[in-house]
Length: 403
Image 1 (cartoon, rainbow, N blue to C red):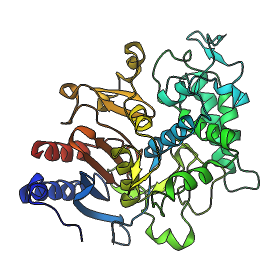
Image 2: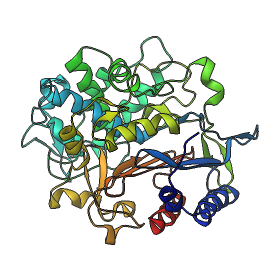
Image 3: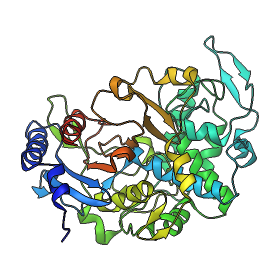
Image 4: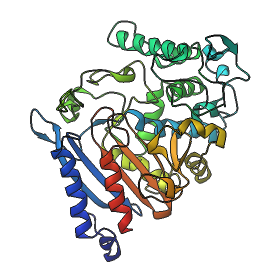
């Protein structure tokens, strides 16, 4: 049982807790999402936890603390931390070209607006991958870069249960051979760069990406339910993913967006550094708190303090940030090391404090660390096409109005 000081009890009043709970309850009632749990940490202690709704609507199974969720892009901060572990050990240089480790990135070409291809002005670097400025893209059909990238992910999805599944490193080499949409370093473009970083970790360590994460992060951080798949004995805790049908009804999602197995029933040879992990709210809280405490978890140092500062204060050059202009949820933020960083709270769409960092996932998982307030906010759900959902902003405003 966690005990709180009187000061911490007053940090979120009973009225505030009721407002948060009702906000989540209303989101479930209005079919914005099937179920959601929320955790707020302050100064390393759990300030508030609540849960609403279901992990499986058809079975009326309630969402719980130990419900396992697909993190999707909330995998990215974990990948960035893994990369920085190698940087602080002198095994990886952020300025080195990706091609030194992933040969498929040699002799890259950029697709111009007229459909012609030109050589890159300089090689893509590890730093470009960390900042989403490598000229890579995600899936789409507007340009040759997006069409060829889509083919890579489709091939992974088609073969993931077969005899010859595409591996993390094979995927990265194939991505490297796709045309780029922009010159490296030119502009921010949300992309497959984090998936390539998983292969970078493999090239440097000689281990699979998953093995490195388990040894260096998940085991020391006591994250037993975080991995790239869900074993049979835990499958009953895996939350069902939902989507809206044409009538706005929540129905089970059966796809495998970004080549992520929806059932998570067997290990995927492609261990996606951009979207592949599953976790629980408690597991991810351990990772978030380690970052908040400058690389220390329960008295043991996992990362250097300066390493964490570098990891969590990245930023883009003004001309690079132009790529973020169409993302309304990122107003007031810059980006670096696979995370958003709040620089201008007055422009943001919800209340916050300067220096806040974190990210979210395609199925609605959300993470924010606010060092100025020693505050962590975590929310877990499974509703496709969510990102920073409206319920997240509503809850944030309640929380920040009270601190």
